Length: 77
Image (cartoon, rainbow, N blue to C red):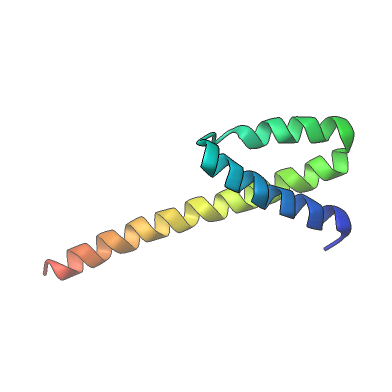
């Protein structure tokens, strides 16, 4: 990765942690708007990192719920 991508990904990780702590699922949009006015390339990298990390988080949650349901059904046999 380049410097911009590295910084954008590190910021995305920090923003995700802040979102969890604050309970604000849309906070990354504010950060993205601010970045767009300062550095479009940083904003693009940040938003890409956020989308990828949010998608991965949601997919893992879906996987965990489905696996838990499967295991519960299997245990009840």
